[in-house]
Length: 149
Ligand code: FES
Ligand code: FES
Image 1 (cartoon, rainbow, N blue to C red):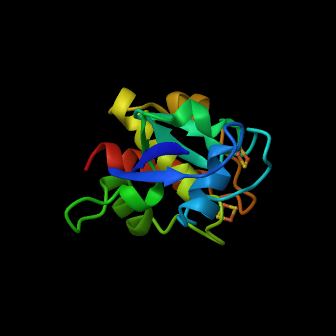
Image 2 (image 1 turned 60 degrees about the vertical axis):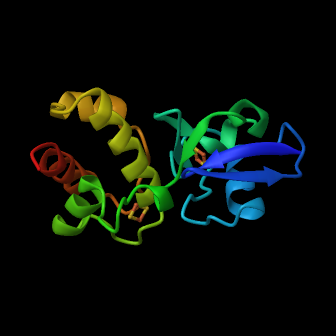
């Protein structure tokens, strides 16, 4: 048994220690907002926070996340209020199909914690997530909107 703390709640999961965190979050815990894209740490669809840092959960063994604070897209809103990045995403009409967007939002919230006012270059360097719908311009606008909110 491995104990994971996800969005502030402890979960006991009966999985192999080398199971990717992504599958534990989705299949064992049932939080399906975190998506599977490539499975090889390239696309960012599976991004969550582990102790506040953006991590690609498809490539992290669940045993490495035990005892740490894991946050998924479902845990971002607080006290019934969307996170300012989520609100900026709505205001700027960012999503197209939406598949990549929870990973994008998790990557951006982690970036804004480190750099509250990122430049375009900072955004390009930090947000390497892939969007097949090509929403990159809207994402950039939303990041600036959230930074100024
Ligand atoms: S599914 Fe994890 S980076 Fe693509
Ligand atoms: S919104 Fe469709 S993949 Fe990004």
